[in-house]
Length: 116
Image 1 (cartoon, rainbow, N blue to C red):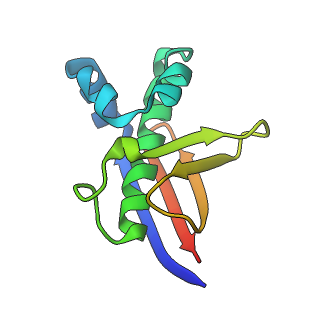
Image 2 (image 1 turned 180 degrees about the vertical axis):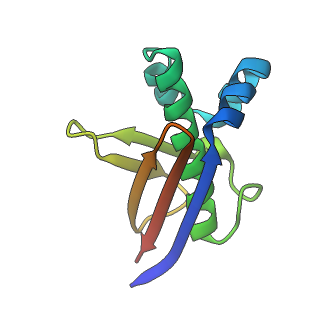
């Protein structure tokens, strides 16, 4: 049974400015494993990756019903399977988590569905 659906969209130009002007924000959002991936990417791909992760974490918090604040961004880790499929690891929810992340040159969007 579906118990929550969340969607979030971010503008990549804003993400680029945040990364440039406030690099400490990266540490507030990304887990160590996510940062390891982030650091291997070129500048443009870093913006897409960070934007997708940020949108996904926001979408998860909306699906969970708390919004960011009750749970921390780093409580949610998004990694990719070998085939590229994103998966969420978190200790705050034990059910099934379905996630989709996409981006264009302007935006990143994520949808999360939580299922018992």
